Every structure is written in structure tokens, then in C-alpha cells.
Amino acid sequence: MTQEFIAPRLHRVRPMKLALYQPDIPQNTGAILRLGACLDIAVHIIEPTGFDISNRTLKRTGLDYLKHAHITRHVSFDAFEAWRTENAHRLVLLTTTASTAYTDITYRTDDILMLGRESAGAPDEVHGRADERVRVPMAEGLRSLNIVTAAAIVLGEALRQTGGFPETRPSA
Image 1 (cartoon, one colour):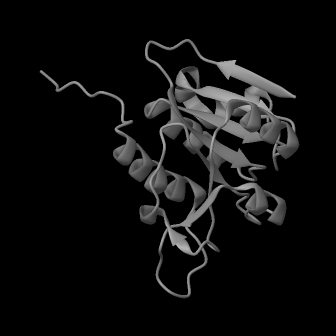
Image 2 (spheres, rainbow, N blue to C red):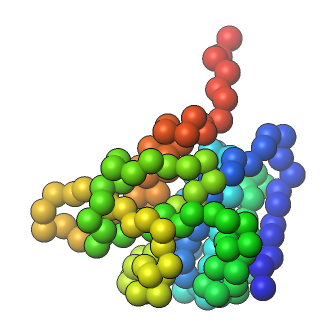
């Protein structure tokens, strides 16, 4: 089952999307909702989560940015996959185990950039279904970036490649 929360918006949501696979930390989810709202990117949350995902919790973690967010909740990875297959989106998994750097692929405007759980990453099933797996190169011996940081880095490159940043208007 898929449930959408679409905030009233004055601007359009871009076709590129972020997806969180069973997120553990509400503050990270809130920061990613803020990132999505600021860049006009929908965020898909694949349940179950490691915290109460009620609208009250989302409001607390998303602050006042939630009113600008486009959120879709999927009750399971299978429900997400059914939706993704029906809508023909390519899945790009951000993972520390990928051999391909995030700068070495060509992004598409309708890609879904997926992040795994903060505590355990994404399981083999998700790796097996991903169309691309990318990593952010890091200093040797360090485990991983915070998922919000990784999302911002890779999303920035994907939007740069596809011309997908929101229009900006110079200040007067």
C-alpha cells in the first residue's frame, strides 16, 4: 500500500526522487524532507521505520519545511517496487559497498536515489533490485557519511547533470 502526502505548493515537484529504506533516525528523515522541500524533490519513505512515523512525528522532524514537502509512504519494499515498476523509474542505490563513484554515472531526470538504513544500510534484496549502485569516495578507514550528507552530495550531482535545480531569482 502506498500513501501520499502532498503539501500545497506554488512550484512543481521535479521528476527525480529520494527514497529512504526503513530509516532509523527521525532527525535524519526530517533533514531529508527539508532537503527535498528546498529542491522540489519528492521523498519516498519505505516502512517499517525505526521510529513512530505518524504525521505528528513527521511534523516535529520536518519543522516548517514539511508544509512544502511531497512525501509518499510505502508499507514495504515490495509495495515500493510495485509502484516503481509501474512508473518505470531507475533505482540508484547509494551504498558504501559500491565500486562505482557517484560521479561516474549519467543521471536521468526521473531517477530515484535510495539511501539505506542508518544502522545497517540496505539488504541484499535491495542491492539486487537496484539498477545502479554508487558510493561517495571517502578517506580510507572511515565507514560512512551521514545519510543526509550523502543524499545532498549525490542529489547535487544528479541535479547538476540533469539541469534539475529549481530556478533561482536574484535578490533585488
